[in-house]
Amino acid sequence: SQVALQIRQQETNVEARQQQVEQAKAQLSTADLNLSYTQVRAPYDGFVTKRNVQLGTLVQAGSSLFSLVSPEIWVTANFKESQLQHMNPGDKVEISVDAWPDMKLEGHVDSIQMGSGSRFSTFPSENATGNYVKIVQRVPVKIVIDKGLDPNHPLPLGLSVEPKVTVE
Image (tube, rainbow, N blue to C red; front, side, top):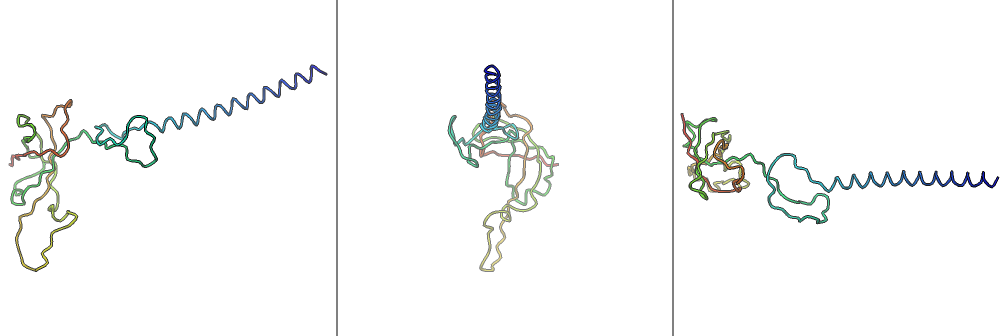
């Protein structure tokens, strides 16, 4: 009977230890989940810019950590409306970069926006006096760069370039 009591106590201890193991597994699962939240995965390849945090910084949900820039590079050139008559998507473009005069890039016209820059600006210009003044409008043209970029030295955003479109 003493032996039976000891066996019953040991069985109870085993059950308690099994519950502790299950609790530890649940805690491990929660810790793994929390660890996965510490990894930031980008939705596409790119370059990290404007980093607002350092390694090990505690952040809150929704905090802006950094900006991700796509490696797909294009130029938005604002051409005068009078320059668009013969311009079409697919036209070849030679691009010179002001910051690096020796760099010559090649690209093509991807698209021509269906409206002038003033129509899409935050504050469109209005003529409140009713006087008619003809102002040459500028139309954004997207130019995709095809050749000449060095993948080891990406172009910084916002550089000034001079595109020359070959129209047919």
